[in-house]
Length: 361
Image (cartoon, rainbow, N blue to C red; front, side, top):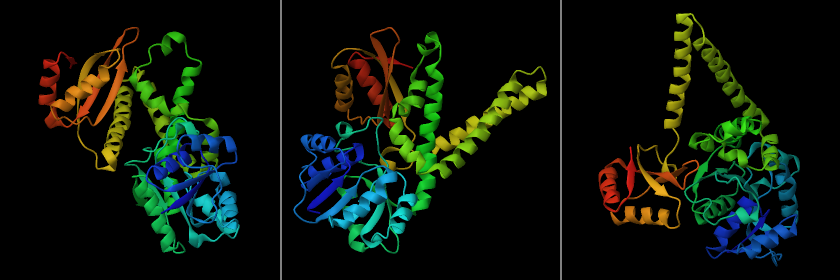
């Protein structure tokens, strides 16, 4: 791939452009808001000038509702040899493209499974897709050259290609992406009118659950409007679990011992099913779940503390798989949880204590 055009310079489009430009591809940027394209260009994502002729690949990075019209216009202008979109819904846009009479042999629907709570070109990063799944939805009509261009894009962005049927993809993202967004927002909404005393008690659990609730509502309205049925199906199942859990909790208040036991059984059932589901979530780089252990260290809120603890772990050859910081309310200190392989724990704990760190159970 020598040249590509990115139409839509939001988070995903700009991130893809940054990744391609960083690997020597000539990238052209286009957006309905020229200011967005100029911003992305200033970040090093490419040029906002128009290409002199057809490029290798056109990347349509616009909301699902605008994919078909944008791609049809790009094909009319003969912008590229191949076309793909990166919208988070695949079935609906493809059916709209068919209705518009677009050339589907030179198109493939794709979806990189990566994102952030922030949007716009300023949120873009060249490494956004590294190690993340990137879904490709080819059909019998898809030209081999276009599929190869899509695979090259995925490779240049250092993502992991996953081939799926478009409608199967939409059902999958309803479960693993769209429904979690709504549930996170619903939990966070409870905080909007909560007493300030309660809000001050927020800890790591509520931070984890509500992180994605900070996302742009306008973006999510576009996404959910394109995939309402599958999301509603998953939410209906969640609602059934919620109803049963509410009844179980009410039973725990009963004076009847049998009802209380039934309540305990109901709560235990949903918690254990949660354990089972969580254990299936892929681990690092999409690999099978791995059992890690956590080393918890007290850390001061001072410049250089994080760099020092990472360096101390590196000196003894320990790779930190994940990290989490829990701040202590009202104090200039907190706890940092270092997730490492079990075999690394003894050596790491000894090394950290020798270097003056205070470890917690």
